[in-house]
Amino acid sequence: ESKAVAVTAIIDTSESIPLSEQKKVEDFFRNIDPEKKERQDELGVITTARDAFVGKLPSANVLSVEANHPGKVDATDLAAGLRLAIAVAPKDAANRFVLVTDGNQTTGDLIAAANSAKALNIPVDVLPIKFEYAGEVLVDQLLAPAAAREGETMNVKIVLVASEATRGRVNLMLNGQT
Image (tube, rainbow, N blue to C red):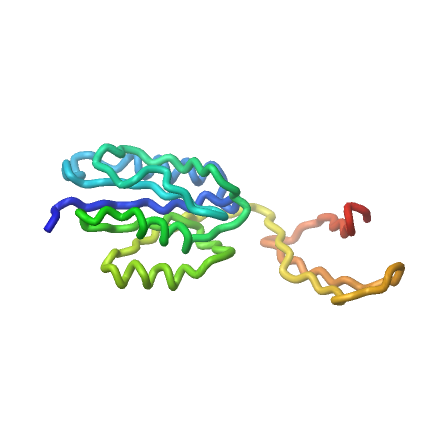
């Protein structure tokens, strides 16, 4: 039985998280007291957005976390990050995962991936990233007919949700033209 603990940070680097918040994550890991780390303990880094990538394999030589992500950041697949962490988890250490995210998952089945980690007796901790956008406006629904004839006028309903009262402009385009 190994005394080493391999902690793998699975970091959500999608565009829903401001860069300033991602830097805070890096600072959090940088400021962990090295005196509390056993010599044989390991740290690894997985970044995830549309896809998951290994930033650093778990190793006793890893001393910092960088949230650099080489892929597309226009989606969030936390399950892919967790599955990749399971795949690279060292067999000769007790493993633990830290999922760092705002929780805005857009694809993947995180519950199934977490159940896989549970079946392997790998704990998954969550370090939530909390922040607010002032004046955020989101498209909640876009309702339009499934089909229309060329030249036909059709009604489109757009339902917006705002964090506070605001004014704005919506441009509806088809093939780049209004």
